Image 1 (spheres, rainbow, N blue to C red):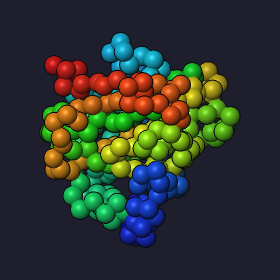
Image 2: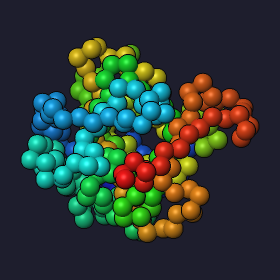
Image 3: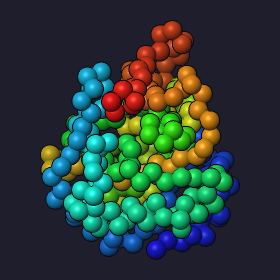
Length: 258
């Protein structure tokens, strides 16, 4: 299904990229398969959104499926083609490709897609720049790697929705990635501020779709850093603020799952 040799070929580029290890690969998967996934997803009628009050200003019109409470049998029944594709992304073959690309010798899949799966952003929606959670609340493994695959055909630049990668000190936006069809973005998540803080400007009937998969290792997570999603207020990005005035918040996943 994929050109597995690209992993080793792009390893040096991946590891050297700034502001943190990442790569953008276009046209990596068969187009007909992604179109089938998109067709299936746009007909899907079950969507979840974050109901934690303090996150509302950071995540606007963002929907996802499955949730942490979804029976994965339902996911398979509702979206069989998408499930087949995501199973491949969790296969031994794809994990070997990721290991070759990133240099991470050990990577584990997440069969319950905690925080991953299908992401949908509607017109006016945004996801503020943030640090991802780093410990899986159930397996306790360290989240190491993000893989995003965009499903947006005929996307227009003026609609926005670009993924932004920021410097680790949050002083500069270093990379912008348009969410175009059959584009895959892979990046290490440690101290990796990212998001799309500019509200989506697409027509009312055009949503931004992506598939998100996360991969884990056995590495130890420092107790003070566990289970945190940290959002940064959009108006603070790029300003020389000290630690006392820079605004951020944390989301405790374990409390959400109780």
